[in-house]
Image 1 (cartoon, rainbow, N blue to C red):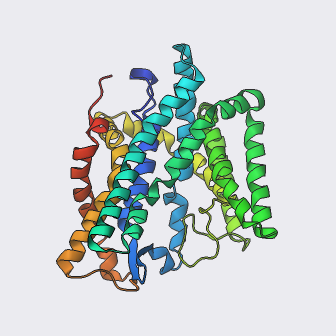
Image 2: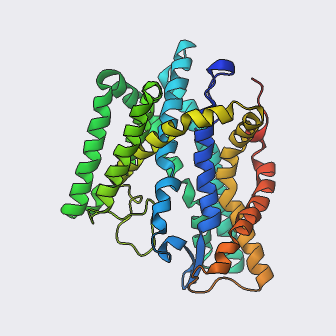
Length: 370
């Protein structure tokens, strides 16, 4: 996953589709933040919202664009593959886990620490009392890296469950996620919901251990998985219990993401089926030399782009506010002009992010020899 270079072998053994799915999931998150973040200005400073809060029915797109379930699923497969290879070289599980944690935690903590120090300096030097809000907005997308680090730390347990209980471990995790929702939504134990930060994402990660078996299934089973997940999504959403959006919408009483609900399990099933249905077409594309180069480039830049994309976005927003002579209003409703300028928002944030990557993320973008 994003912690390091693709841990798959070169040549015939290399699964280009895994590389693509891993990088694609990160890029979707980046573009979503760049294109669909609306900043509003209140008494406490800037706060984010999105067009989902203004545009009826747009939430259906989140069933495709909320790709974190896919991210954790592919991560589980990559960890299993990497662990099997490390074990063949005589590496112990403790060493393997600690190396993985360090490779991801160090850049994430460095980025967060830099922004926190910068925020403190600006606050004290210029008396900007809302700077803490800015810092929080910039580093908040790193939340799932914290969850990912916990899952890496729990890898010895998840591997043990996989060896001893196989698919039963997935059923237990799904059942546990559902029980948490019952405690939260039926009996009012809101704090219990945060257990699903580990249970639901742990389920997605554990499901990745079955990646090879899913790939080997006949195509009719891929279609069956897709429809199973899709029908489960419709049933859960239109039950009236869960919201339709797979991302948080400001103003909604319940979010499927903070903390995750059982709906994310259905979304995971749907996305697994979808990527398998698309596999033959994508593998043909990725076998072409031009697509191979695109895939390699996207993978080299996916991690630094994710880490620094909110920094570049902050620079772009500051520049546009400075050029416009002021910040946002108290309420920003997306109109036709706002939609038309989305390509500019993405391009501007990208242009401001690339220099940051060149300064602080060169170690991840250097072409690696095979």
